Length: 360
Image (cartoon, rainbow, N blue to C red; front, side):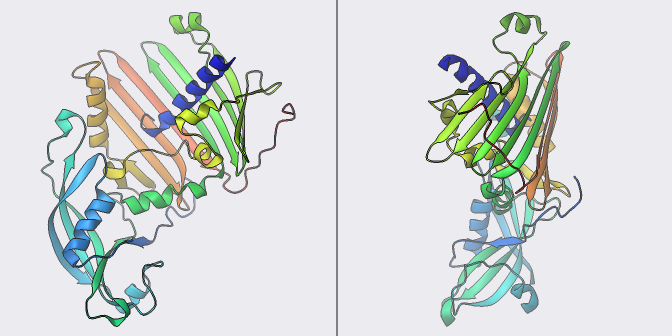
């Protein structure tokens, strides 16, 4: 039984996390109004360099500073409208806020053909705030990430704001994935309902134990229910008979996948991708197609040298939270492979989960 549970858990996690890289409506898209740097710096130049290090550089790419150019100054009214949080202490005074264009190039990490420095120069406009701490003669400087505009490179501050885990501990998530190759197709569908300290999962997926049908490509499907409680311990139950009975997973097989409390389970479907190559859009943000196609092409190259790939990965944002994620991939590996997935997030703060009656 334990081995069977572990197989089920592994299948669930692989399917759920697939939205990460394989992978509307009315209302405001963003609530991110801007963010000031956590640290202060001794000069405008140092603050600009810190902006690139902290907000643009990531695991996928490192930003290399080329030029810092002042292009304007914020008015006193505009300065007063900045959200400086608790960065300023009592008595601190903002002396000025310069509008600065920071020019940079990117060094791409990863596969060999992506490792060379890109020749393109990118420009990001930020504010450099000069502060007199409690009237001191020696001033300090902080960068300020302004509200994201369409076409901007995505910053760490924006990414962290939208994906703040506290925003997703009570919501309903619906996922569907389809893939097809050489006349064989496969679907996975599931619903996750998280309600602070309880969660339900209902999933339809190919039956991994039916090896005979898998060999023919004519998959048979099974329905799995999961129930989760987060209290003194994080407890998991699984059902293979649509909730008629549940088996407790006393060893919590989900732990090895980083699921150890309700927050980690509720955020399992959130993207765990480096923000280096994301771009702000009118609907939220997306991964830049040129990078995505090249990256996926490199990954598939070991299987099929010269493989051509077309891919997209889009994140829709509503009221400062993800509302939908869509991914599509078409690849020519000598034969055509297509895959698509979609996950929606809804019922924030209103999702209710009750313990199934069949669990004592």
